[in-house]
Image 1 (cartoon, rainbow, N blue to C red):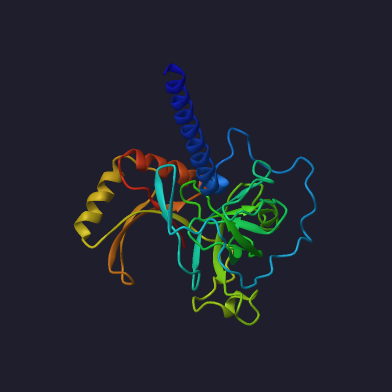
Image 2: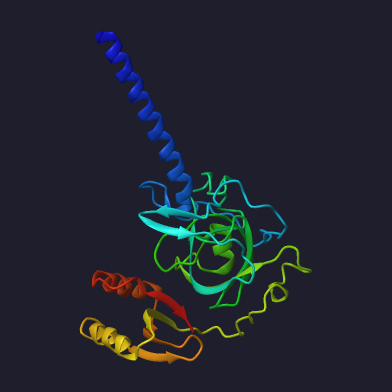
Amino acid sequence: MTYGKRSRQNKQFSFCLIGLLIATIVTATLNGCSSGGGVKDGAPVKPRDVSRVPDAKPKAEPHSKYGNNPSYVVNGKRYYVKNSAKGYVERGVASWYGTKFHGRRTSSGEPYDMYAMTAAHRSLPLPTYVEVTNLGNRRKVVVKVNDRGPFHSNRIIDLSYSAAKKLGITANGTGLVEVRAIDPRAKHAANSSENSTVGHASNRTSYELFLQVGAFLSRSNADRLRNQLVGVINTHNIKTGYSETDKLYRVRIGPIASVETADRLAQRITGMGIAEPQVIIN
């Protein structure tokens, strides 16, 4: 009787252990470039010359078996995956990942190669090919999005080491970029001007960084939020403006001198119980 009871307990323990292992594997797969333990990320000790690493070549591919669930949860937050990348274009902050994840499995199931021209994105289907432009120096690269991330607030794409190096953002760790989806089936797919009706950024190399804290139908609600911020944040210009495009009153802070300053401000704002602000580049 005692033996039978222990046997059942051992089986139950084994099932629990198997379930825990499966849950751990699934979580690690979804986390993509957000996971990696306590090891510090960075550039290789003896970096290769990546100047001649070719851009990714866009080609029509089916969605990968992994990483394309309609939604997923990382660190308690739910993210939603787009059905299509058609027409996608966005400006924001890019980051990059390197040695910490080199050789590890990406969310699509492919091994991460920091020397390949790839990237991680939270919502684009896997794979998607995108053109990334550094708004500060006008350098461009084409990368294959095959991973999920970045899960740091106010980052729109996580680039491989090679892609970030070619764009010139590895030294600072981040850069202001424009990300534009490429349709591999279009003629001259690498030329993204033929793949979107949204106009390209001009040849400017000077852009301003703002934090949008809220957008309201009511001017009084926008003013109320602005007054709340003025009492706490007095070192940056806080503006309330009306947008004819979407008929909203926007509350923005800026221009802000650096991504690091924007990160600190965003942290203070969320600490006030206000929803996480959004990075805006003008």
